Image 1 (tube, rainbow over the protein chains, first blue to last red):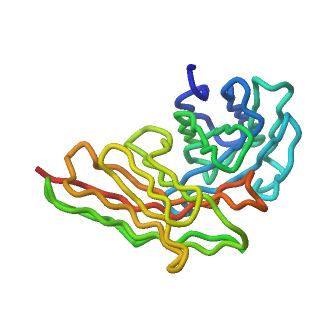
Image 2: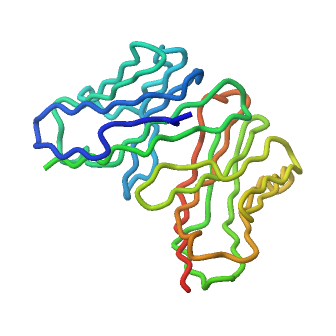
Length: 114
Length: 113
């Protein structure tokens, strides 16, 4: 199994530009999560999906952020327009059914907005 | 509600020293407990877990025992190595909100030769 795959690994963009982060979860996992990690705020859950349906998006900071999961093998997190304060590492994670299952995290996308 | 509290870091130890990272939790149900490790530039990796009271999770020389009476899940290792330098996160998954993990703030560990 290739694990959770995120792309790109690094993204540098100018303020105001649209940014799209991508995630491919582990095959068979029903849940997909998007997290943001910064030094100041640590790990923050942005949104999660169950069977491709968004369940809780209360962590999405504002309307500039949107996430989709068009099928079981692909999800995107979009920021439009981007701002310098969006600079962070964004992680995608997936898990299977059952309380005993841990998350499997991707390697993250380091976003820098200048 | 659910929450996890970890000891503040950073922690710096000499090689072969004993490690303890404290973790306590608050949960509305009967949670499963986890420790994750994050090496520099990487995502979080599951280190060990325990799913019920008195269970001991262990992996790579690390251990943690699920203590319901003290609501704790402290991480220990008898002899740390330089390669253990990383950030360690305690987390819980509750039976009522099992889809979502609650993470602690992380504890940075640096092991010096």
